Length: 337
Image 1 (tube, rainbow, N blue to C red):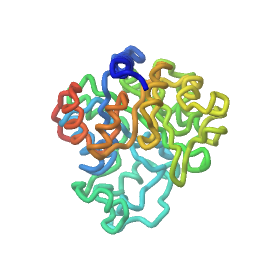
Image 2 (image 1 turned 45 degrees about the vertical axis):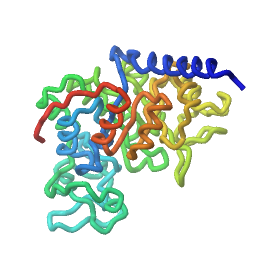
Image 3 (image 1 turned 180 degrees about the vertical axis):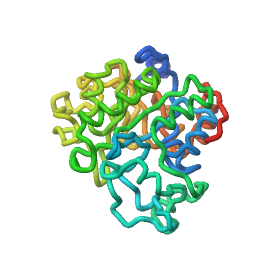
């Protein structure tokens, strides 16, 4: 059994290493602990909408986490699903659409704008998950350009964007192919001059490989899920999500696999994470940003593990917990959507 002094020195060593990683620069950005508002903070306001992002900016977060798709006429819209969500989208008559919902690739932007996504279908499982979300009827699906415009309006020159490409390699007919999707996304980011404040994340690692080739200064975030009914990663083989990369070729280590793939950040489901894995990732130079953490005790535990950031539907609660742990909090920049 190690002595008490040895244990204390080991803990201090791990904490020091974690702080060094947390403060390192990625693509010219010095990044401390990262408080990310998941879909703008969907426990509070309708997900991936301008009111939600305005609320997150006003309270103060480090990063706006969001998801994007591409429409039939080439516009980039902010939405978690690859198409209209039957639990969110209501037509002009106020009726929720029937499942499964039309893919954005088959709809023009003006057609998408016709739908109201400001209130969760009351009888849905989703509504039970977020009973305190404030409904805002009349809210529409925004474009990525509109989100960038909102941030400019807020005057916030520090907030970053963690943009997820909604591509499923098992459903290629529902989106542009990865090359077309990445070209559209990077083109829009560059045109809006936000390249130095963006990270691109995906469960589809082929997307991330393309981003690394075409925009090497933009950090790539490798999303992983090991449990549940639809895991995207297996430790003993490559899957359709991992662009040919297999943890089996790297001793069953996800951090080593992501490092070999060229990733800057590992973003696992928080339930898959241990302090040992965080330390392993840090030793490889990877940041670790976990998703989606909504309970106070889980937030505290992840911070104690040494993670570099947390994605949460409750950025307000995450700010409280981070502050209690002595983490510097980002200033809010009040703005109306």
